[in-house]
Image (cartoon, rainbow, N blue to C red; front, top):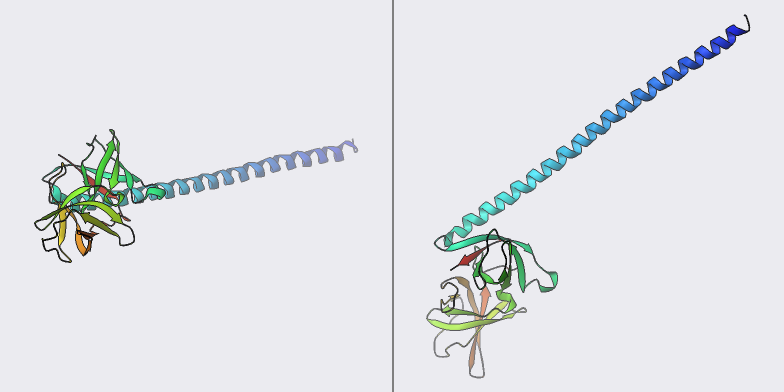
Length: 223
């Protein structure tokens, strides 16, 4: 009997240790689980806050663009956002997101002036060819008409050809669409930077109103 008691004592101690060990492991597991849940909730909360901040910023940009573009509200138009610009053709074209089908050849503007023309379109997107991509547009400088059909990247100017040599044109004169094509007339394009005569032809260099490096929301004017 005396020999059994030490053995029983050892067994009881081992059982107590096992029970205590399991209790500690379970307790630590609960603590880590709570900490993990709290961390997950914090990450989710931060993620939602960031999404809300991004959405609020987008809404503010849209409202600002809409307010500025309301100067053309007499026209039938579609507000669009630039979705894609190719780094290799950055100044030639862009893909815009639209919520309706727009027409090929429609003028595309922002709050500063004419950006380009719709080159192709489907129900959700459209390809816009920029004036800097050498789009041909009939323009008017005062009472003088010409064809804007070239872009000089070094000068950062459009070039207008087919100008009447006998009509005075001076630096700072405003250049607008003529209305002789299918696009609307009187859309602002830019102002005269300089003129030069090559042979018998007068060329007019036009500084654009639009900053083609910063295009975000645009408007398609449907006729």
